Length: 235
Ligand SMILES: Nc1ncnc2c1ncn2[C@@H]1O[C@H](COP(=O)(O)OP(=O)(O)OP(=O)(O)O)[C@@H](O)[C@H]1O
Image (tube, rainbow, N blue to C red; front, side, top):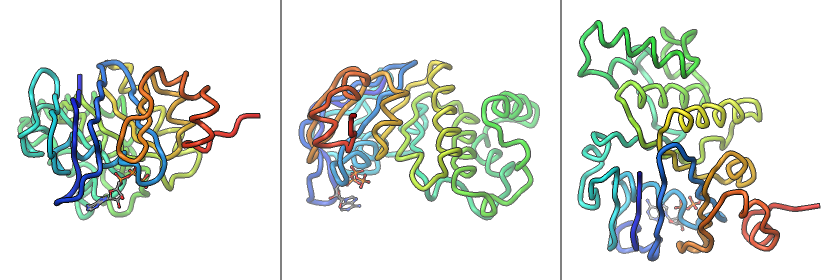
């Protein structure tokens, strides 16, 4: 489980999030939606240890991670996936995966690789430099890297932004696969409709505060909130 309790967070002296409570469970996709600048990315960054926490607490699994630096949170199995800066551009895909699993010996690496390639369809790209891959494929590689190091908590920051509809669908399918494996997923998305359709629970952020928390389907069908904040136009 990932939880935030009365979380106040931001950057430097600038507070962006106010008293945010969130709970994301294993085997579920928890959507974080809201208008531009409402604090979706900041919430993920506060959980990942990249934004500054002013008050409140962050829990990863059964550990209080509030004061942990980002690399310690990663060691607990947390993966923060954003569209840019997610892979080592000058290394091949295979070298990226090797970096992610540097603690494994050659045999265990091969076994793990086989397992991960069953989940993420990047086998044809293994020997290509990561910089030659499209943004969508690089994101697939980043997910594979997280799986190589046995990540169990996945924070996706706008994974479908700037992708073709086909690739966006492939990424969302992969995210559902991770959910079905029992992982804990938080999905921050600008495209609220697509995110809510595949999510179990949802949080609507407005100006850094939680405006709705509950079943994703209920938010999808909430005409007023959908119209006011999510650009969901209903016939
Ligand atoms: N590194 C930073 N330093 C200072 N302010 C920042 C930083 N990153 C974001 N902000 C500000 O924090 C506010 C919330 O941004 P955030 O990216 O969390 O929103 P968001 O809901 O993810 O929006 P979007 O969908 O546009 O990415 C914005 O006003 C933004 O300008």
